[in-house]
Image (cartoon, rainbow, N blue to C red; front, side):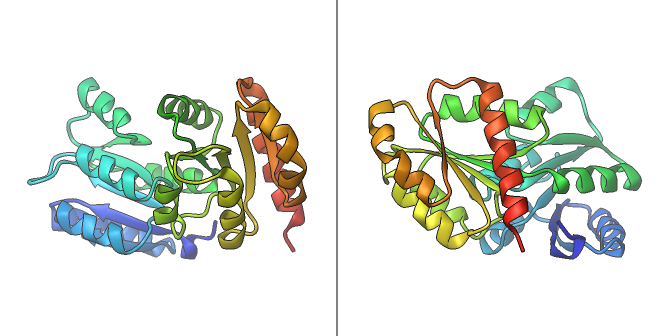
Length: 248
């Protein structure tokens, strides 16, 4: 991903901190927005997607943990980094439970921050769409550990809200969602993101056997539950390779 195409949000109630980080990241070519009020930051998140959000832990009105959680609900593909002068184990655990990618200590080392942002933006984004919340969070943990960015959403309607956000390279879509059939959702994903790849996952083997040809005809692959984690990771990597070789 080109730096000029990446949008970063910095949220800190210290205006000097916002300005300093904006200047540093701006010099490296990133598009940077800042907010010194977490509620104002939420309004900005509602208007546009961000690739990375850098959030101060302690702010009046809404702390960085809750802000991280709410951003995750709106744009699941946004990488959320917590910044704090109080990086104790309790704060680190709370940040992880809210979906933060990393906790950084103030004052932020500019070189470390740049390296981290560059690294996460190079990671492929995988979006899991499944109403089994336990499965989603388990997959999120595994995929992050092997070097993917990962977002989760639990319904077609939630995905629709995020369809203009950071573009996933791979979608993992349950065939049976409460509010929409996975095949129908597959067609909408192809319309919005023709270069992305979709893997349909299902426990209904007989039904998928009848529809496998339909899915494969439009470029999707199929992974049957219960699946081995290693098998799924290889499917994702194969889909990424296929996406890259098919681009002009």
